[in-house]
Amino acid sequence: MPAFLPRERYDAALAFVRQNARPLDVALLDHALGEGTAEAALVALSEFQNPDGGFGGGLEPDTQSPASTGIATSVALRLLIRLGAPAKHPMVAGALSWLGESLDREAGVWWIVGPEVNDAPHAPWWTWSADAIGRDSLAGAQSGFVFNPSAELLGQLYAYRDAAPVDAVAVAVAEARLRRAVAETDVIESPYDLKCAIRLAETSNAPPDLVAAADALIRRSLDARAADDEHGTASEFAPTPTSRFADAVAGRIDADLDALVAGQEADGGWGLFWDWSFVDAKAWVKVKKDWRGHATREALETLRAYGRVEGV
Image 1 (cartoon, rainbow, N blue to C red):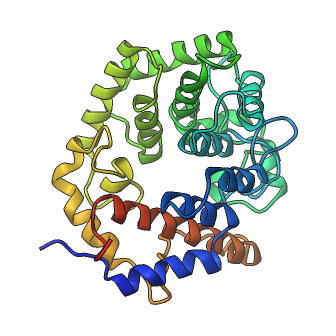
Image 2: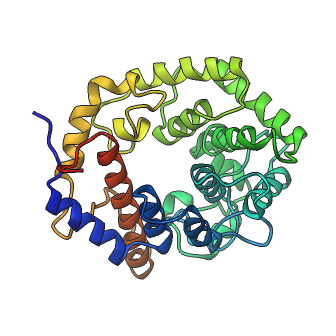
């Protein structure tokens, strides 16, 4: 029998977010519940945007550098699309401009972070190599950035290109690189690469043939994944029953949602499976709090979407 989040535990989770999460996560949750406006969430998101149009400043909490990064800008554009921000919105225009200027046109990708990441607290997996090979060292560890974050960022350019002055050359270069990667890849092994590929496939305005090829690759990759990998759960790949790949994870979703219900902690929030306090204990206190607020908001949204909350 499916597990449901009891109403009192649901209320405890709401209280946890509102008392502990960043203003952005509180505003996003309020908007999702119909209790807040998109504009309030956009105002909270604007705190992470830089004058160059990109986003940083801990929007992805494991990178606390104020500098604009590909990973933070992909998160921001994901939220801008979710909140229905039009192409003419200054935040969207700034982000699209930053993407046009920051693309590595030789490699056909956006770097996930830059060397500035080392100047502020960050998780060890985001460390920029200080040796002579620089970005290439990090790129090797991050699958060359071709899926994460570049596939998602390309999809976000597609989403706005019919109504915004998107850099056509940047789109063409990034698309050509992604097409090669899709054609040459049998299975996407990294769950983070896979999530970015999924977001590309789910976007609007993408070339249908590219979406079809990506769809086939994604389905092969989902089939090959271990069901118990905490880095990529079924509900992350299909956060709602109407998600594009919900059918591909249908055999795993019930067990995953049961585990999500069971994962709530006594204080009402959800915990994390990673920890980098051994790198910077002081910074980790804030980062952990930010991530737990984010994780709890997403858990609530997922459980509501699948009807797993009693009385809601």
